[in-house]
Length: 357
Image (cartoon, rainbow, N blue to C red):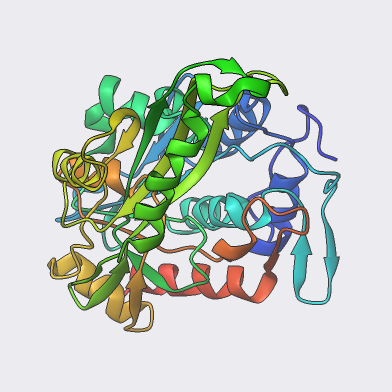
């Protein structure tokens, strides 16, 4: 595997560069060595201005073009699952982070190195801590502390999308539905009130729930309301006096956070509901001129993004953004995570053509 002293060679092809990035272990919170290598590699190119905030590296062209496009990708991965170092089998590169999202980062680096005279000014953002709690997200830190570094007319987040444009993203809301009862000895259960049994109505409402299908800009978003955890019980001989059902609501981006919360509270009317996590979605914005041009340059088709991504942060900044990267979203975080080498080449080629035409 690459060591902290191993420089990155941006003249490598996209697949080989992805392998080098993958072999730099960079689990969330431990990205410094990779951030150092990315910064050092970018500083070799005189057409780029390079800045750093923490383990977040931003490189920019300043050519006075009429439009600025930002390309972003996170440096971190989920914990390694005995899937390093990387290896190649045919057209597939295996290893932690190949799909999510070091293949996208490799494309960013290749474009930064090979497009000294793009038709639009470019900003390349490489950030940390995307895979963990939102409070540590490097892009969020940049938005709060260095928002001028993120100014752009359009943004592309190179999250895994299977080389297809994925518009917007779902919002996510997590709540705890708390049920209470009366504790008692299990041998004399009639003296108590079993809180776990009260969860039956909560689960019944979830089972009967009909999720919306919502079309926005021609893309169909499928909402979902699901129990993701149940906690309850004191001991094997005690009737429990508390049970908590954790519910996750993935909602279409035509709802804001307040509307989503109101809907969930309506579904669980009569129950004690506490919000524990919330992040807004992002509208696809495919009607924007920059988005239309990008869509035409990358094949002319798009689909809705199922899941939350940092396009929502760009949306909050007023920057239209899409997801477009070579990785397969269905392989993210898997032990057998891999990425197609041909997809890496395809995404780089399409982006380079769009930015050079």
